[in-house]
Amino acid sequence: MTLIIYINGVNMGKYKKDWWYKAQQFQVPLLGEEDLKQLLARCKDQEERIYLILLYYTGARPSELLALHIKDIWVEGKKIGISIPTLKKGIGRTIFIPLNDITKEVVDFIMSRPADLRLVLKWHSIYSVRDWMYRISDNKYCLYFFRHNRIAKLANKGVDMMTLKRFKGAKSITSVEPYIQLAGTATKRIVSKID
Image (cartoon, rainbow, N blue to C red; front, side, top):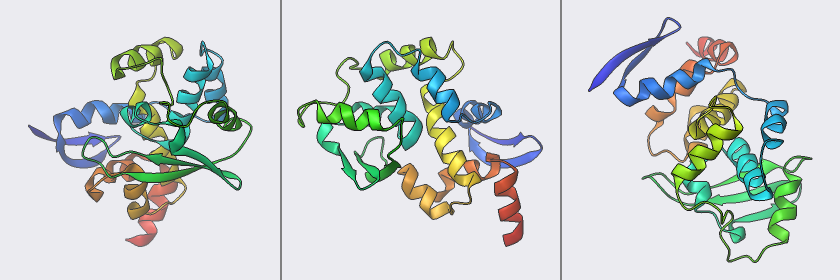
């Protein structure tokens, strides 16, 4: 089933019915690093903290992060490189995140573990990760919110659609359009200059 969806008066065009539920997440304000720090304080152990940090900074699918191994993460100058595997018919990609006070914990973690281990050992299914997210966020965020959060933030900064497509690991640019439409006033100003 396809619907024509309007959000805040913006015609979102025709999307599959399940897009409506994903689009509703954009009604929640985007998270910043201070919000991340509050969620990190609710994590029970270092694995939970590492997963949350990577979820926030990479915009990766939650299942892609579950598939990561220690060897998929490395330090390159003042950046952390992460080789995201191909899952869900997406495209594998390498993402670089900044090395800062928060992400330094990821570096310390990977240096203390054997390279062939999975990054997160405590969870074997996406359902247990989902329950964890609901616990630490008091049912405010689902796992995919962090993916939408990162991509919308990049769109707000004026990142072009092709770069967003590659960052997202998408095969089609049409999956990036909702982020442009919903990203906010900064992106809308940029798009209006193009028209």
